[in-house]
Amino acid sequence: MAIRILLMGLSGSGKTVLAEKMVNRIQASGKTISWFNADKIRKACNDWDFSEEGRLRQSSRMRELSDSAQTEYAICDFIAPLPQMREIFQADWMVWLDTVDHSVFEDTNSLFVSPERYDFRITEKDAERWSKFIVEHILNNKRRPEFDWRKETVQLLGRWQPWHAGHRALFERALAKTGQVCIMIRDCQGWKESNPFSIEEVKNHIHKDLSPMYQGMYEIMVVPNIVNITYGREVGYTIEQEFFEASIERISGTRIRAEMGLP
Image (cartoon, rainbow, N blue to C red; front, side, top):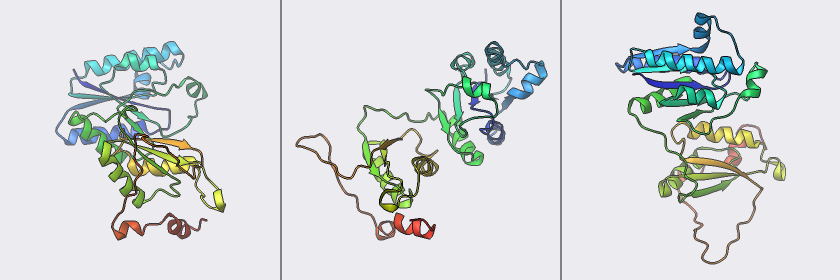
């Protein structure tokens, strides 16, 4: 039976483009793969029923097609907005393309429930980059780490205006300590007539730099504009400053903003 790979996400998120790239990479590795695209399957079956019943039927159909595939892998790309649809499909690997906030189909937007569990969450449209990363993990059966909220974790608190190579170096050093990092973003856009980037822009900068390589090894939290950290005795954690070589130490968010013509 083929290993089932589900590419899910709203219309316009890039499922089909990513599927094509992944198919090409898997074939280039010498493996066999089938590809089932939702629109092509609906057209072949002349079934354009987008009621809840019709959507569940489509999930069953995609599952049956992947099970009948005479290949080592089967990719199915369809929106799968409902948890029941994903339960029916029972993917061996699930890729959530979270690159758009809404689609042109309002009925789908209102139905869509973000998955709580997935193997990969894609937050930018870069099929070349992501296909390479995902296919490598699938072919080697290498599961993405999952952030464990009870595990010892390193905290990084900052404005990240913008996130840059120096921050990346700091993150990698922090990651080496416990294997996971909580990146806290101070909510300070416009503070002291500077800090031009919004929370969403800062998040995007961080995700673009750290994903896919470190997905599952970090979480982002938004916190107030913290300007002082006060603690008592025996708090169970340490506060330490990291030092880097001169080329890293010289990287400055202030200088980067100036080069961008920002305050």
